[in-house]
Length: 332
Image (cartoon, rainbow, N blue to C red):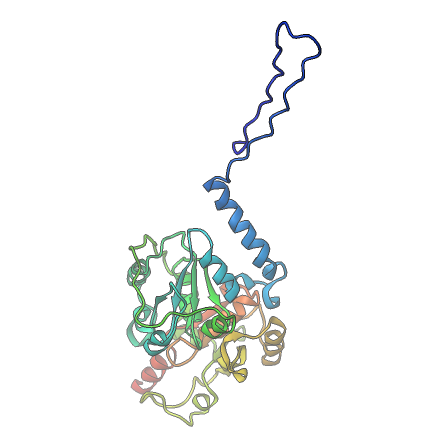
């Protein structure tokens, strides 16, 4: 091996010396300090041994639990060798200023949202990602304090970025683990990334025609993921008409998270979500369209079904959501 010097010294024979010649002790191999390349392999291996056991069994029982990451895993990646993950805080400005994961970058909703809260174009999203220093081979970790991280995960996946994960429990989990936070404005990305956005994944977004199909197609279910009061029309949000899509079923986004325990950024276990889906009548072989007010909360059940192993081609997010639907309905 390169890190060792091979060879054994021969016994030196001394001419004209009586008696047996004592051979010199054999040289012990001289150990060099581990090379930089060796350390680059060794350190991730140690991290894997320390923290990889989390995913030895599927995380929380999810078939696609790799899309979630724990606070301990994020800390290990940040403390490990380069390349380090790019950590994005999908939180509001006030929350960001009060405390964020050291080294993370602020990604407020307005930075990755287009007209009426809908997904921005491929070109604009590529610009957004590059501005955060994201390369095509970067690992991206997204966290929040409520539900926005699932939406940002969905956008990255929509435009071809597969190595993106959501910090389960968000900033609350990070603090609960005893890790430090930075305060203030933070910093910008040190350099522009080279991420190339792919064409949007076919079918991941639904339009009004798709929603209308759910009215007559028994294999297509439309799900309202808003609050109960929005669902029953007892509240008006941001001046829009109250109500719901007539043939939609109700499955509030809160049911998938530990909101009742004060941890809205943390997902329930696969067993809990499986019981929820069975009770609600979800079938893996059906198409499922999710909507909310502007397509953000609807990303939570979308992401949950992805974790549960539902066929990705059966999952659809109605990006226009209630903003588009209620306005078109009022105009008709």
